[in-house]
Structure formats: C-alpha cells, structure tokens
Image 1: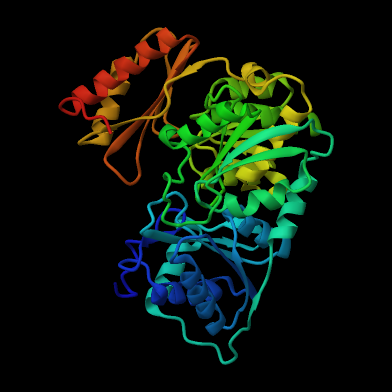
Image 2 (image 1 turned 180 degrees about the vertical axis):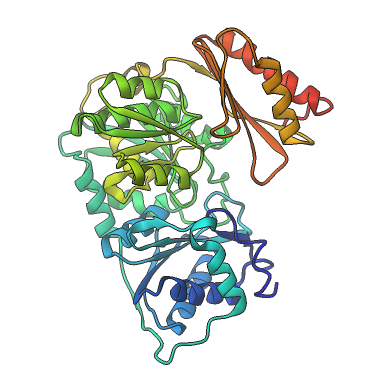
Length: 457
C-alpha cells in the first residue's frame, strides 16, 4: 500500500488494518512523524500490546516521531488504559499500538493528545493520515528515544482511586484471553486480599484459546466454568488491550454491563453527591432511574466513546458507562479503564457480605434482548418502515439521537445502523421477558421482512 493510500485504514477512532498488507513498519513510521508534527509536542509516549507485530510497529512509530523532532518515551508492553494513564500523568500525547479484540492478523494505532484527550476522525485523525500520506520532512535535530516503565505507577494510581485495603478475602477468577490483562492484573492485585485464579495470562497475540472479545458470550465459557469449579466470588474477563471488562457472578452467570454501570454510579454518587453520570442509549432504563433516585443527574448519549468523552467534558460528569463494557472515569482523565471498573466492583463486593448476584439484584430491574444484528439492503428504508409501523400507537414516543428509539412506559427498543457493515442493530428491553420477546420479535419481523426475508448476522 502506498503511503498516500491511508484512507482504508484511517477509521473513526483509530488507524487499523491487516499487517503487513495494509499496515506495515513504513506506514507506522510515517504516522509517527505525522503525529509529532500534528501535535507539535516536545515529547510523546508509545505503548504496545502483545501482538507479534506490535513491538516492531511501535518502534517504527517512535522512529518516525523522533525523526520529526519529538523525544519519545517508549514504555513497551502495556494496556490501552495504561497508555491513557501515561498520557494523563505525564501530560504528553500518546500512541497505543493495538487492534484490541480483532483477529491476530490485524493491528492498529490509537492516538491521544496530552491528558488522554481522544483523537478521532473529526478531531485530527484525518489530518494525521493526510500528513502521513504526504510525508513529513525530517527535523534538523531529531528527538531522543528512551525507555520507560509505566506499570508500577499505573497500578499505584488505580489503587489510590479505589480503596481495597479493608475488603474481605475474595477468590477472583480472571480470564485475560492471552491479552494485556495477563501483564497488568498481577501488579494491580499485588498485596490485595485476593486469591487469583488466572486463565490465559500468557501473552500470546495469536489468541490460542479464544478470541479476546468478552462481549461474545462464547468467549466467557471458560471463565464461567472456572468460577463454578473454584467456587470463586467473581469472574473478570478482559479484551486484548484490557480496556474493557466483563463480569461473571458467583453462579457463573454473565453480569449485564448496565448493572455494573449502575453499581459504579451509586459508588461515585456516594463519594460526590449530586454528580452527573453519563450513560449511552443502549444501557438499561434502570441506569438513569437509579442515578436519579440516588440524587444524581443522568445524561443520555449516543453509542461510542467519542460521544461519551465529549459529554463528560461538557458536563463535568464523574463517570460514564456503556453496554459494551467500556467505563469512563473523570478521575482517570475521563478515559475508559476496564481495570478501574473491576476494582470498583471488587470494592463493592468486598465490603458487603452478600454474594455478587444478590448485591447486583437491585440494579437489574428489566429484561433485555441483548444486541441482535440483521443484514439489510437499505438501512434507512428499513428503519423508516419500522418507524411508520409504530408511529401513532398510544403512549409511543420516538427519538433519533442515535438510530431510531421507540419507547413506552413498559418497553423500549433502539434500532441503529452499523457504521461499517450493512447491518441494523436491535436492542430491546421491557419489564417482563414476555413483553420484551413480543417487542423484539415484532421489530425483527418488520426488519427482516423489509429486507426480503430472515438474515440474522
């Protein structure tokens, strides 16, 4: 791929593609130079995950940034939230080489400004791609590249944010999915009254055991078995770059990220009464209800970290949660950290004598469908047909903050298009499983009928 042809790998939130066909060391070096030129920073940070291509790409990125005159602090192995910690703590722009949960042949580069402020397609990523494609002339005085160990400071900072000193002894199973949690969990948990049951802590970017994508229930089966087999109090699962966390309770049942959002929101509101909490429009209706009941201010946003982070900045929100297992904290530079979310859950569980399933019961008020994808020919036309089918029914309210949301007092659903595939994503929720199933099935019948027949994806 010529350097001028970067459009195919410059995505909404990062640079990502197949290695080496779309993303190679030459491209990474050009992006590093462009990043240094774009930010104008004296010093930048690089971090990389455990994929086989990640260290060479990070080194190339650093060489490019140094050639453009920036000093480079090369932190080596780390999680994405460790890169955010470094950017925030040091006050410098950062680059994280990772493809998160993508298959092994992929890799990518996440970029942020100083203070872990995100860079997306509308906030500089397009310009960086253009600069990289055109080439950045080398500086008269290249920068220096030096090594840096972020892990001890990262672990200490997280443990300062969440006090776990007084928790009861807990048995905790953790599935790292051969990703970066296998590197960070031992340091973060060191000294805690925790008996750790580790699964797949060996760093291996080929993901030999299962995909490092905990949003897929199939990838949680080993953790569920381990929790039941070891009679653990809780199970934690992280994705490849360890910025997302999913939880399994003591019964081996998967916990809804909405319940975790509500739990953490209640903890943050106890610390800061009246605070604003962000939730995206796919989270359970229980989340804004509980926030309001506890005296907080819930703010609803579109799906996606750029929208969450923008609303956190606008409102000064103390916390934000998404259905996808991303959790954002004002005290963590408004960035997301799966590890920090996990520590909040451990703190809540460890200071209560109830099992996790009972502790979370009050935060699980409704029955949800989970996200269901349907392949369609024309996303807009199908959504319009669904809107028409529900328009005018008694008590129905619609909005289009993100796709189509249709709601009543008893149920709601959201139908939103994928940005990258010809899919419509359905999420439905109701007070009972029967009502939820009825709403879900009616919408799917409309969607798949309009599309020429059933096309589940």
